[in-house]
Image 1 (cartoon, rainbow, N blue to C red):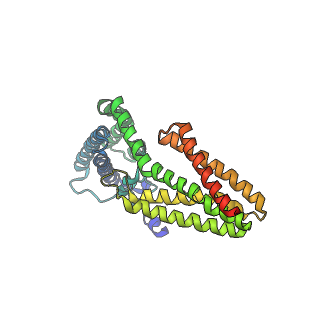
Image 2 (image 1 turned 30 degrees about the vertical axis):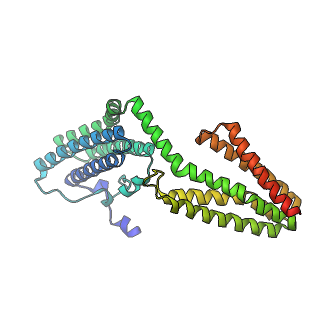
Image 3 (image 1 turned 180 degrees about the vertical axis):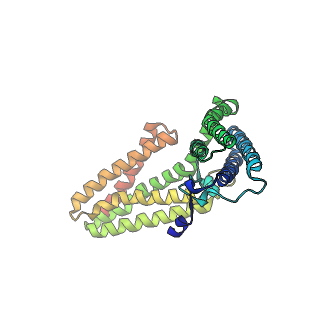
Length: 325
């Protein structure tokens, strides 16, 4: 790591020719990034894809102007110098990460790209004494400063209120299908299905250590089972529910957490204190499930409460009766 940093050039040490070459490669990279964003978004968000297509065309125009200036000043051969060769130069996220970025995050990343590009051209203009080059770099700084407004104009042309609402709705739906739905199923399974074995063990043995072990085993085992089941039964290609890995992770983690919530109070040595706290945790878990159902699944709140709280109470009662008997 330190050797890589030591091998980088400082921006202040770059020659005018190298600054121009760096600007050219940066514009090429930005255009590719915008086109990658557009390609990824085209099927689901065509209006936003059109915005990024327009931004890529503008970056192409900047690159052509820079190449012409380099040709006039230094000839046809452009030195190979890129962002990673310059210490402290602003970096761009690798394109493979964009597959995991939300629509809002991609838009925010584009805005950050515009701001940092403007800052680069301001500094680049200060590094040259050639009037024409300085004028070009200054014009590009101004263009990047206007780029945000240009993006807004493209948005107004291509991303109408109805289109943006539709795209945001689609993004929200995908979030619910990929993360909320499997996570909620896991939380319900972890919170409700582990009630019976944990409280049956608790009332049968009245031993907090044994109850804790049973709770940990039930929670972790249920989490592994739910995670693998969710990931294996649907690859998301036809259903559109998204990555099976993400869904399996959401389901497995939330299942485990749902069970651990009322298992961990049995770390307390006193049985009745631990049981009372565990019952309070169960109450909170069930109300949280009802809230998530109402918030993300559009289930009427009182219906969600009836389904979850009554169902949980029945499972808890079954566990307590079996353990007490």
